[in-house]
Image (cartoon, rainbow, N blue to C red):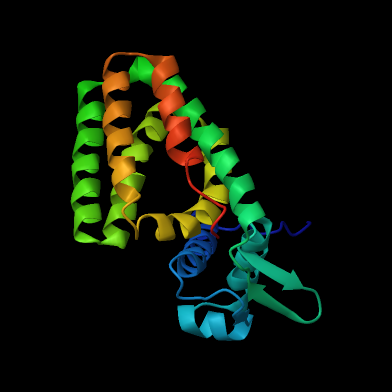
Length: 220
């Protein structure tokens, strides 16, 4: 009788995937918020010890981060955090803006009053954070705001693209929301809510695009 290969327990498979995603998210966020600074050398042994995991999920995360342009890998030498490159930010910004335009256009017809109220509440938090100069809080509120049409549209391909390129844009947004330019986004948010409530898909999609495409890259 032939021995059959044991089938891995499904829960363990899910747990390993969640671990990989968590390690990727934590390293990505550390790069975006500057904990891991541009030019800093990344060693998988040190990162694994810092995160309390094995080297395997760290290596996988670094490969994903390289694909997103957040780190630069030099085979046989080192992996370093990438600099904030104007061309890379501009390219990512254009893609992210287009994805949000699509998300809003797809979502407008399905918005409920609860969805619109969630956007209003997020924008109030965003405005308060900008006024107080709390950049991290502003970014969280901004994510909540734009997350509503993304969730309503439920376009998985769109979500995958945003997950890859939004972190590149987010590094530049940290500079933007540290300045008074953040107040302009508050006004765009209010206009976007108004157009969504009016079921104006074309108008709302245009504002969504402009909200991200207005991110300046010339001073990076």
